[in-house]
Length: 610
Image (cartoon, rainbow, N blue to C red; front, top):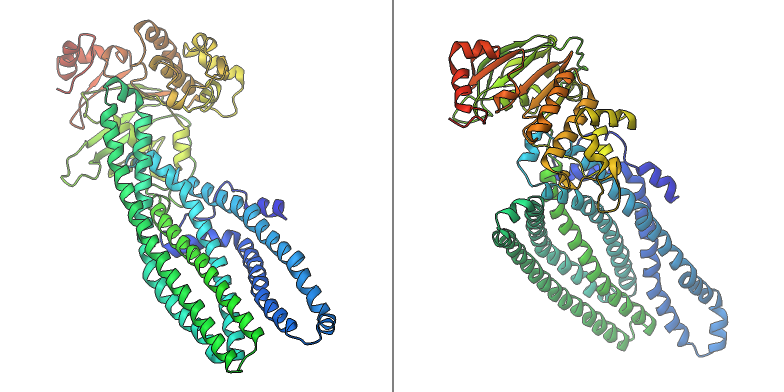
């Protein structure tokens, strides 16, 4: 049974729908996918609860049996009942517990948790780039990991808590009331007090849990931020400042935990008083009724274990109910990341981008990043790039070059105007097909914490090792790759690069990134400071390779070092989001305008802000 259930619960490639934004809808979204298993857990939980409820009845019957004058005859007559009791305790209860444990621990815990975690990750990883820019990676990961456990545990705890309190409570009331209604009075009053008790404490527990969960995610976010940027921390000798940065939120979290534990202490103290009143009240009324001859000792012997069991179960159920609401608090916090609708989605009728030629047209683009002051990063930008043309974008920082590339890749949506590739508006094509048609080398090269071969193969998943080596040679990376060895002794193309490629130098990471784009062989090529991390000798060698890579492709190149893009077919000079000049390197120098001034100021260096 476990293997069949796990097969049904294995994560699928594409979840049927996105997680809803409403709390109960969010729960049902995941519960309905494994509702058969929760139903099985409901049944096994009922079985365990009913068996445990029957045991006090057996105790009462044993007491009555022991009151018989003819003990041998009484035992002889009750032998089937005694054998049944023994079989239930020795076989029935262990088997019921085993079934409950198998369903819960072997099937539900691993299967449901993995399903929720996978589908949450699947949704989050497809959020837009700005989504990740606006949050800590550590906090996002923590919420994805914690929410899956919280959803599962709150549902499981609800099922178990409901059955135990219903099975024990109703059985106790019926049994006691059938003997004498006064015997059931303490249990009835206890139930009323228990409901009030839960209504008072549980919402407070939920709210404190949500606060604690938010602060735990914040701690995780800050800690991961420090670790991710550890080189900067070391270079600026700011470990003490990082201590304070993390300690502040740890202190907040400690305060939240302290408040939570103080509430739990009041919770348990109040419950213990309530349970003590139940036991004393049931015992006092039972002895009084027995002394009056209204009930026999067997009834008292049944009532007291039932009351004691209810008291014990009430503590356990209270923890279960508390756990439910604690986990609901965690789920609510996690939903702030997971149940967020995608802001940039493909149109319902989006089609695959076809790039037979590679012509690009920017049509009167105006873009503000949604700023309230309306300041334009691109201002009526209009540019046509012919198929196979190599265009260099020139301008100081903030002129709009990177924004233009980000709009081309649909990391942001166009506000006014349009971008067309071979006549196709990029808003009408799928984002994956758009980005598959564009090869990009960025200044800030980030590698995956995997092998060199896997990083290069990211450009074309089906590539062979020969293809990977050929691409590395074109990027002038093959020689240094052969000399690599990682911390686990893996060498060459099998060596791992560390998180974000920290085991490699900036120039080595850049060459791996170029090799990845060489292998991708997309019809449109974007170079954003592609050789900025390279020394002059390697840059010269790679420049020649890049010229070969550009053959037959439409190219957009950005570089602050003007000498690296002087050989482009056309240079486009931007100033404050507008095109102020366009032409070849020689033509622009002859104009003695913006470009000529930049060239004269640069003298082989880089463009400044002003």
